[in-house]
Length: 212
Image (cartoon, rainbow, N blue to C red; front, top):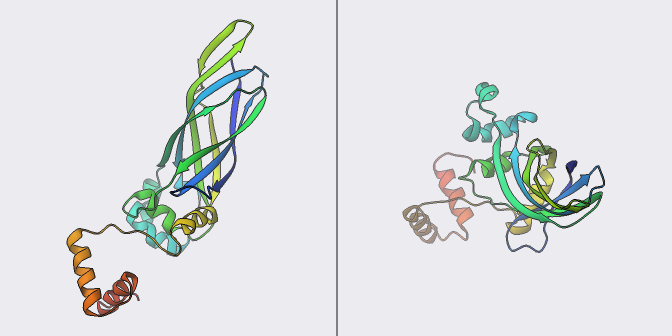
């Protein structure tokens, strides 16, 4: 039976991806030096928001995700971030692989709101593994399941996430609006000779007495 451990050694933005993608560098070790032919590895990545502290400004923005901070002892539950499958090639002892994880920046989604709200520090992640191990030894080919208890914690620097988003959306964020709302904003922009949609929204906020 394979004696596997997995740790996340590093996470970095993929520079040449067409969409925002993080590369999770996994270090996989088989402690018994049993040759592993391949692993069909499934990785579930969860955010564990209860494992960090939040500044006042972060708490204000996270109210839309977790509710009133007075209830955070009940509402700071793990959030699903990603679920990816990857094939690990043959190795003996230890190997390292990059696992690409595609990331969105949709502020209508809880994880998008969560990442956007953080000013600094780290995002506590937990990587949970399952899948199938294929081996070849004296008894011929063998197949077994990845142990369900196999997991790896990782603290993702918020700076890495911001670098990834700035790479694809420099100094920007995405909002989903209804078509009629978009048309109304565009008409207001044109009628007031405003240069950008950002300037249009700022003017609307100022007229409404909100923050500029």
